[in-house]
Amino acid sequence: MAFGAVFVAELGDKSQLVALTLATKFRPLPVLAGIAVAIAVLQALAVGVGAAMSEALPDRLITVVAGLGFLAMAAWTLRPEDDEPEDEALGRGRRSAAVTAGSAFFLSEFGDKTQLATLALASTNGVVGTWIGASTGELAADAIAVAVGVLVGARLPDRPLRYLSAALFAVFGAVLLFRG
Image (cartoon, rainbow, N blue to C red; front, side, top):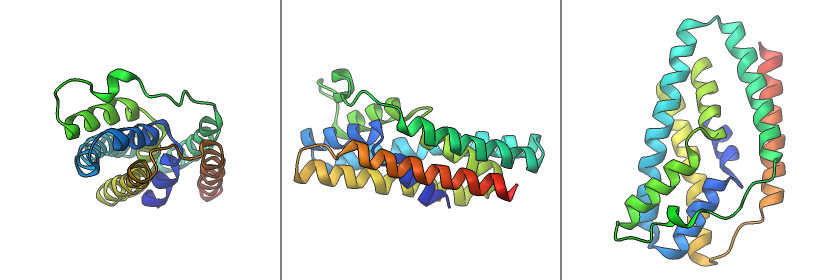
């Protein structure tokens, strides 16, 4: 479940556009390596907080809050975003492409809906499986952006991806609410 939820959450996200933009400026493997490290750290933080919540709160409450969280993420996904990554995030200095990509990605993704989705999933599912699923799901979505950035050097159409992502979040939220 974590792979699918986070993969969908990342589609059309600002951080995916950051990955795409970085891939138009740097070689793809260092970009992907930097993004992978940032994802691993971000998702570990989210899983840790989610696991701590599961120990402190009753299961029913966690399931309802997670369901409401997914519905909120569906609404959040539909909000318009600034599609332009900041020039500072593109690393115009002498840093390596991997460090630039990892730093820019970390800053654009910190506290984002994919982290919140991971936190919610970790509070109701296994920690290791959630971390692996969330990390690989997010990396897979961003690898697509990197590949598109390399091949085309243009942006993915944002609106249809956002609508699909919002619909799937709403489904995940409804399932959690009815399950709880």
